[in-house]
Image 1: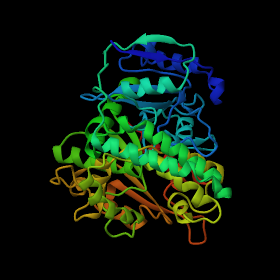
Image 2 (image 1 turned 120 degrees about the vertical axis):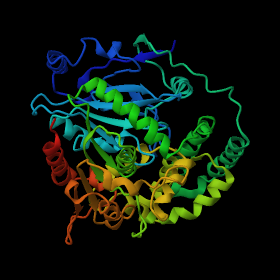
Image 3 (image 1 turned 180 degrees about the vertical axis):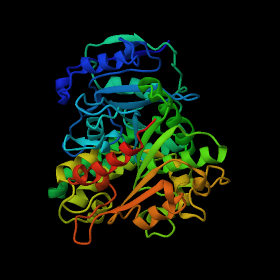
Length: 485
């Protein structure tokens, strides 16, 4: 029987002012929660704040203490037929807000953890929605953020001392061995290459002003090397997210929040929105209710062909990656390496910053926090399947036999689709290519940004300085209109 650890901290450490006891009494009065639900529910650990070991980026300041989970609660849900336990960050509704009928699920982009939806108190999509009265949950897909397996848990605990906590048993007994630790030829080759590169960089002390960059690169590479044994287990694709991770999270949220009609509201950014479109399409084809009251997609599309998306630059990597059987693409470590060259003189990679945020829309400190801590590594299989958005018919399933765009017309879910006028990754032309496949009476489409400014790049829709005044209210108004039973 597996053992899970429950760590308890004072909520004041994350600036929470609402009385959580009142919140629990409020829901117990409606018959929706048991008094000691956090310990009685299956497959769950709930904590008020926990230090997180994010596989990827410690950053250039050598801060190896990890991140802080800024949600009110952190839950774990097991994925059927898998060793993974997915992290769900929960933000409880404000007592000052109107009571809502549906919980809200937030899905992030490819390789992204929960940080993007809760970057700071002033740039927190999740906190804004909970303050509107929504029971808000951010899902971290397998391999990202705090989602974990037993192997990753043991390695993480070796890196960080445990605080005093109470030990509880998981009633499901989900302890599963991940193998005998044998490494493949791929992992061995990557490890040797990585060691050689670290040695070269360690000898580059003469680089003077580039020394912080050298330290950051070394840290990222060392982190990548430490996790190679884990990375070779990264053997899943987009359809695994769609068919296993998201349904497991939705079922868990329904069991916790107990909406009367069993439905959720959902917001998806980038690949998160693609997952929502694909779910609606698949359920429409199978004539199954997706259990969604309404959906908001942010910078998402199933078909990128009409656009000049910068993701086309990655297409030449698809075939070599497939032929070499490379198991993982280290998005997080690569961003850590690139960030100093994009944000500091001589700005060799300045164009990378524009992929994320338009000038003056995101404070440099927050941009650095996002880049250094907001991304992990993803299996090459995920990226290879997502590359089909540039093929005839758009995104298809792993077998190439089901094109997700073809069945959106059969759906009946209200959708708000938002695009950024300066989004280089998913331009408005790409967003509209999917929007036009949805019944007109069900979809609302808007391009954010004005000719004279402000402008919105790919992440600006989620956490820029103007998102809380121009984007969040727009999304909340749409969800409020469809939060009916």
